[in-house]
Length: 96
Image 1: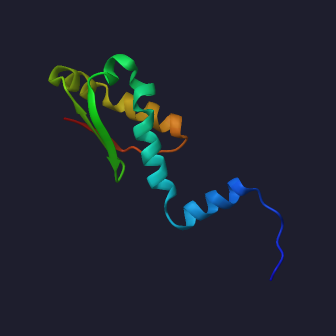
Image 2: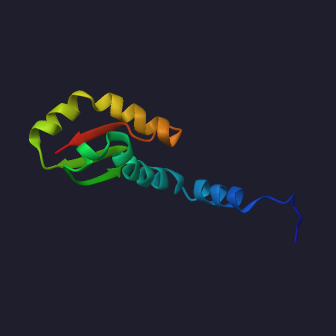
């Protein structure tokens, strides 16, 4: 068995996630979890469900007028989510 330099467990897990291409899926899940923190409790109260697939976040809302309002601020929300994640994961948001 070949000896290598010691690495911490966090590095090993991150390397494994990248190797198996799970780091993007994990960040997509984190983006969905960040939604209430980004938009606040008032908007999150109208959120029925949300999910991210292939860089597109889909948010189902119980208020059509709120969906229209958020559509106008879509790019700012995308920027805030990506900044919180530390990299560009979300490319677009669809409000339904």
